[in-house]
Image (cartoon, rainbow, N blue to C red; front, side):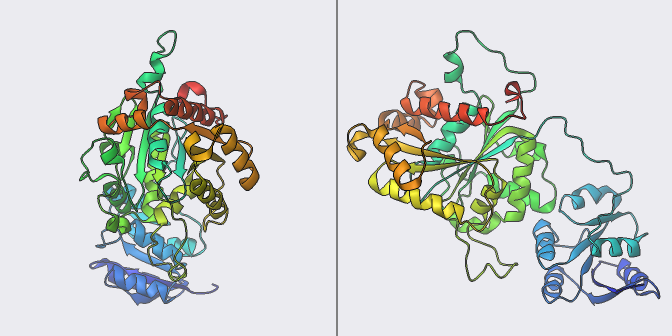
Length: 423
């Protein structure tokens, strides 16, 4: 029969006795080593190595996606007993096996889960994507307010095909039939500002609410769209946290789901992130501890494109060079191509011929010959801030807006698998 599979049982009601007797029957190859009354006890037993598979009731209070992530981090596979009407929600939590309606096949499910062989649910068919998944662009940069939020907003507006851009065309271009929205996400858990920047209510649930739904397995593209108001044609915004102290409400396991659903909702998702990327050296060895910078690291790991923004002044250039080194040494892999944007380029800060000076400095100190240079336009930016709009709406002729439009076109051209008309 081989080695006995050790099982942690967190099953509610009379079904608990049936589970224990079934798994403890002679010849089953499994044994219940701990009967857990709640999620806290279950996580404690998993962390102590008391079992390799957890059998859990789908309606166990507190059982959510973060619980599943913590069990997996402890090396425990998860088998869930769910009601037939609740199977889809439970699968969305990322569990390994779902048994709907009854515990028939429990022994086989536990063995397969222990061997990391997923068991297909009855009548389950693989999902078929009707449209290609959208791309995730993460806007990141060093501390010191180099303009990450401004670049993220203007980039999202350009990718959405803002009104100002369409007005410059010789002839009106109809929207493609399969056009999807662009989604702008405020994932800056240190100092979110997109809601204020766009004149939206800063008490809207936004990202925190989306993460809560993801944690409960109830977030789909439709539910995400409800959390994302439309602020311009084809441009939606998922606002950030109202207070920085609420950062634990955006765990990595939930944000991953939010970004996955965003790919279904939008052709492009632009994510504004915070500057810090270091992991807490004390907590990183504790798989159950939340990480302060998990949102930024999760976004970077999920990105299809990364835009690194720095400020064009002696301090900003030095911070940008160091930030690129930090990004290469980040505790998560960042496989996406990196585009460097030097923002607020002006002669008063870098001397005569500012664009040439910035390019020379980046080539010399960062080894980069290809950077996107964004000129300074304080009047246009201040006017857009006061109006709560993007430059494409408020000042379409702004040199900042034209430079970011070039960045958007550059990102479009990097996408070979997706037809241009679909974006």
